[in-house]
Image (cartoon, rainbow, N blue to C red; front, top):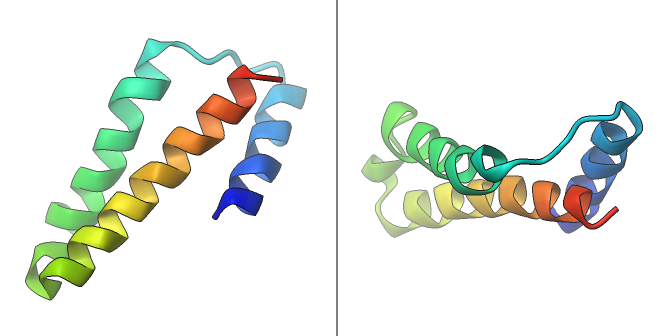
Length: 69
């Protein structure tokens, strides 16, 4: 996940996209919400929770890496 976050951060940076507070605070939560509730990850129990959390972490990592470029 870290590798793909780095690649996506480079891609966004090369396109000139800027990171703001929305990207760091809201987008990871939205990704978790989608994977855990909308895609019914809660039915998988703890594994669904970990998957949603991992997806949110990937989004957060992407924007932190982009901000540091």
